[in-house]
Structure formats: structure tokens, C-alpha cells
Length: 124
Image (tube, rainbow, N blue to C red):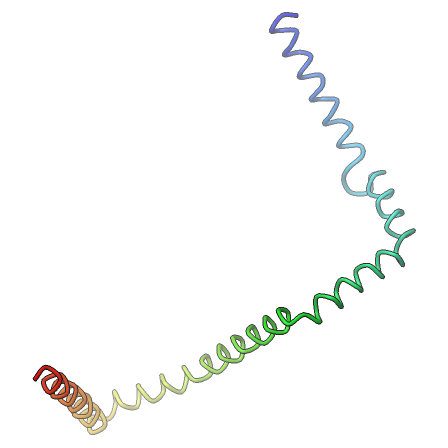
């Protein structure tokens, strides 16, 4: 068999495979209908298996820990999201009030000074 004959044969096989696939698989095609019928005919058995598997998973400590962890993360995220608006308002208030701004600068300087004194004491 020559290369050309192999290429033609390969193309014919590929085209036949595509044609069969397009006729059997896809919206409203025979294989979908067959699969749906098989699932429907075995619905009760599949339901029992899935229900048992679900109950087994839900009752594990790992599942409970995961649910608690995700719930904790979600609650924390919501709280932080709500707080960010309040923090932003407070920062804007400080920016607009020169007296508050001066007090904040003094407080920061005090913290820096006391931290520097602690470091000096630790070094000696």
C-alpha cells in the first residue's frame, strides 16, 4: 500500500467515525435516548446507591470539619467586608479633622519611640 492509499484510507476511516459520532451523539440522538432510558429504568437503584454514599460522606468528621472551616471563612469574609466600610468612614473622618490627624500622628510617634526604647533596653 502506498502512502497516498494509506492517507486516503485514514481519511475515509476518520470521516466514517465523525459521521457515526454525529448521528449517535448529540442533542436528541439515539445514544442520549438510550442512556436516559437506562438511567430511568434503574432510577431507584441508582438513587439508593447515591443516597447511601451521600449519607456516608456527610457523617464523616472530615466533612464536618470542612463545612465548619468553610462556614467560618464565609462569616469572617462577610464581617470583614462590612467592617471595611466603617474603617473607610473613620479614616476619612480622621483625614478631614486636623485635630484628630495630629493626635494620631502623636500616638504613632509615641509607639515608635516606646518601641525604640524597648530595643535599646534589650540591646544593653
